[in-house]
Image (cartoon, rainbow, N blue to C red):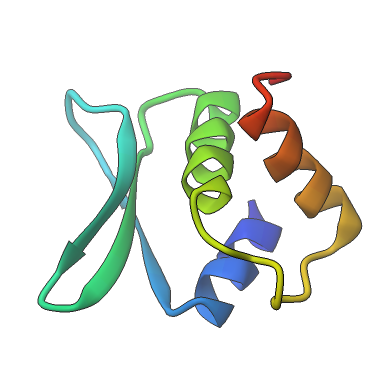
Length: 80
Protein backbone atom coordinates (compact mmCIF):
# COMPACT_ATOMS: atom_id res chain seq x y z
CA UNK A 1 0.00 0.00 0.00
CA UNK A 2 2.82 2.42 0.82
CA UNK A 3 4.27 2.12 -2.71
CA UNK A 4 0.91 3.22 -4.11
CA UNK A 5 0.82 6.10 -1.63
CA UNK A 6 4.27 7.24 -2.77
CA UNK A 7 3.19 7.03 -6.41
CA UNK A 8 0.03 9.01 -5.67
CA UNK A 9 2.12 11.70 -3.99
CA UNK A 10 4.39 11.92 -7.08
CA UNK A 11 1.33 12.22 -9.31
CA UNK A 12 -0.43 14.80 -7.07
CA UNK A 13 -3.29 12.41 -6.37
CA UNK A 14 -4.91 12.41 -2.94
CA UNK A 15 -5.83 8.99 -1.57
CA UNK A 16 -8.96 9.11 0.57
CA UNK A 17 -10.07 6.21 2.77
CA UNK A 18 -13.80 6.20 3.46
CA UNK A 19 -16.60 3.94 4.61
CA UNK A 20 -19.76 3.24 2.71
CA UNK A 21 -21.46 1.22 0.03
CA UNK A 22 -18.97 1.78 -2.80
CA UNK A 23 -16.02 0.04 -4.41
CA UNK A 24 -13.76 3.05 -4.95
CA UNK A 25 -12.03 4.76 -7.82
CA UNK A 26 -10.66 7.99 -9.21
CA UNK A 27 -12.48 11.30 -9.28
CA UNK A 28 -11.60 14.97 -9.50
CA UNK A 29 -13.04 17.93 -7.66
CA UNK A 30 -12.04 21.49 -8.50
CA UNK A 31 -9.07 20.30 -10.59
CA UNK A 32 -7.78 18.13 -7.72
CA UNK A 33 -7.45 14.38 -8.26
CA UNK A 34 -8.70 11.96 -5.62
CA UNK A 35 -8.53 8.20 -5.45
CA UNK A 36 -11.22 7.00 -3.06
CA UNK A 37 -10.86 3.64 -1.33
CA UNK A 38 -13.41 1.87 0.83
CA UNK A 39 -11.57 0.92 4.01
CA UNK A 40 -14.26 -1.66 4.80
CA UNK A 41 -13.25 -3.72 1.74
CA UNK A 42 -10.51 -6.38 1.95
CA UNK A 43 -6.96 -5.19 1.29
CA UNK A 44 -6.68 -7.15 -1.97
CA UNK A 45 -9.74 -5.37 -3.35
CA UNK A 46 -8.34 -1.97 -2.36
CA UNK A 47 -5.01 -2.82 -4.00
CA UNK A 48 -6.83 -3.86 -7.17
CA UNK A 49 -8.73 -0.56 -7.23
CA UNK A 50 -5.41 1.30 -6.91
CA UNK A 51 -3.76 -0.79 -9.64
CA UNK A 52 -6.73 -0.42 -11.99
CA UNK A 53 -6.90 3.33 -11.58
CA UNK A 54 -3.13 3.85 -11.97
CA UNK A 55 -3.16 1.64 -15.08
CA UNK A 56 -5.36 4.28 -16.74
CA UNK A 57 -2.66 6.95 -16.29
CA UNK A 58 0.43 7.38 -18.46
CA UNK A 59 3.21 6.38 -16.07
CA UNK A 60 5.98 5.96 -18.64
CA UNK A 61 7.94 9.00 -17.40
CA UNK A 62 7.55 8.23 -13.69
CA UNK A 63 9.93 6.01 -11.75
CA UNK A 64 7.95 3.17 -10.23
CA UNK A 65 9.58 0.27 -8.37
CA UNK A 66 9.57 -2.76 -10.70
CA UNK A 67 7.36 -4.82 -8.38
CA UNK A 68 4.69 -2.10 -8.38
CA UNK A 69 4.91 -1.57 -12.15
CA UNK A 70 4.43 -5.32 -12.63
CA UNK A 71 1.45 -5.38 -10.25
CA UNK A 72 -0.19 -2.51 -12.15
CA UNK A 73 0.55 -4.17 -15.49
CA UNK A 74 -0.85 -7.52 -14.32
CA UNK A 75 -4.04 -5.90 -13.07
CA UNK A 76 -4.47 -4.25 -16.45
CA UNK A 77 -4.27 -7.70 -18.07
CA UNK A 78 -6.73 -9.13 -15.56
CA UNK A 79 -4.20 -11.41 -13.88
CA UNK A 80 -5.18 -10.30 -10.35
